[in-house]
Figure 1 (cartoon, rainbow, N blue to C red):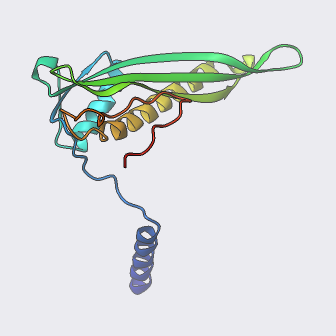
Figure 2 (cartoon, rainbow, N blue to C red):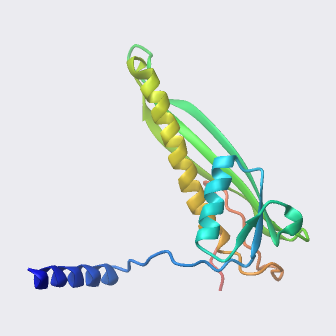
Figure 3 (cartoon, one colour):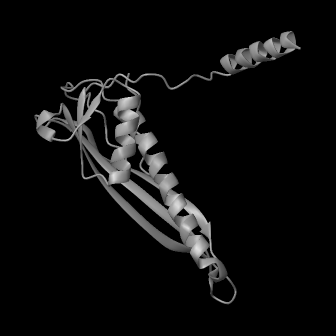
Length: 183
């Protein structure tokens, strides 16, 4: 029985290694002290936890003590997605956007103004209005977490606090074509 368990464990590990699975590991950001400005408390707390937990970078309270300054702004919205034959709303689209810019303390633009935009569909029924409001809050929290995850990966693309002309990290806007890969 122990031999079978060990064999199953070894086979499972081998299959995970063969599929390319790899733990996230430690990030090596170009900046070692980061100031976060303009972020809602929930976003700032999660971003701080992810940056400090996955790298040797420290989030500082004051921009004067930082190597880089991350400026964030958040937006939320909703719009009608579908209507019933009677004209009642059956589904909403919840929108979440996180705008960000990364600059050095000397004013060097490290990441041009960019945005992460996410949306989720929410079915709606007036009988369950309170439950649907709670569900909407959960969907917004999920989108916030997803945006912070994407932002931490985006911050890892900065390789220098003083990039040479033409080697800055380009901004990313939703629905815009991606820049060509570097040669």
